[in-house]
Length: 251
Length: 74
Image (cartoon, each protein chain N blue to C red):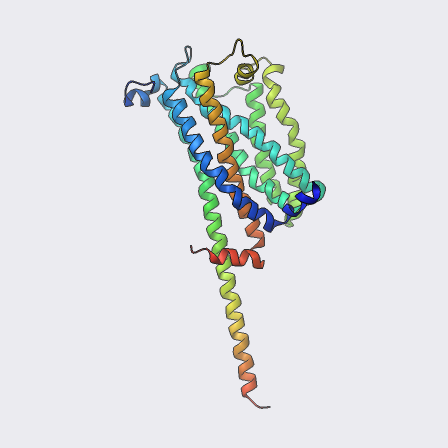
């Protein structure tokens, strides 16, 4: 497997693979996300307790879920970067971090505007909310540390180590609603999927939510692919392969 | 369609501000990432162009000076 996988660590090979993969993420991503949003906003029934306000769930849950998911992706890149010192993996940290930070910010903002009408407060130092805020600072910290050193590779190593230490926060976010009985509710999806006989969420609401989650994954992945290709080209702009490729573009 | 009218859809049963501001922030955030990526790409292309132009200038200057030298017998 390593023999087959290793050539992809070469920046040029990664670039070409990314270019091939991009339309398979971007196009279905935009389509599926649009379907999920229209379905959730206009066609799903209102909640019997929360009325229409619950429709925030269709952006809140996917963004919060993938904020954690992309952190794990970034941590895998960081592990490859720190252990094998693969440059492409270092750049992947830089490609994922801003996307993850934006997803985390979206989840925090949508949580606040959902909390105001339902809980009566924009913010509470609840375990789940605080852990998610720490996730946001971890993303910012990784980006800042990467840029903090004169030698880029030193910065990449430091940022990678911080990303790996920060993994501890992911199970904390996930289990925070079970370990501490504070304001944030427990996972509805887990209960909806694992208990078929008595699901916690109506299928008319669950399906658009699952579609939105898939849409968020594809669109965010497309953004990571775009960013990673940019990071590769930025460093390789003097290499002949990048030169010929860039000069062919008429912009 | 669950809503009776477009205005009911915008109003969201009184939660319009909360629902639509969430939507705005979400798509503003994702859109900003996409725009930033396309700007960065354009900048890299410009840099490649500038490099090529510089390489050509150096080449021209070099060939001009060698022609001058060969034209003058020592």
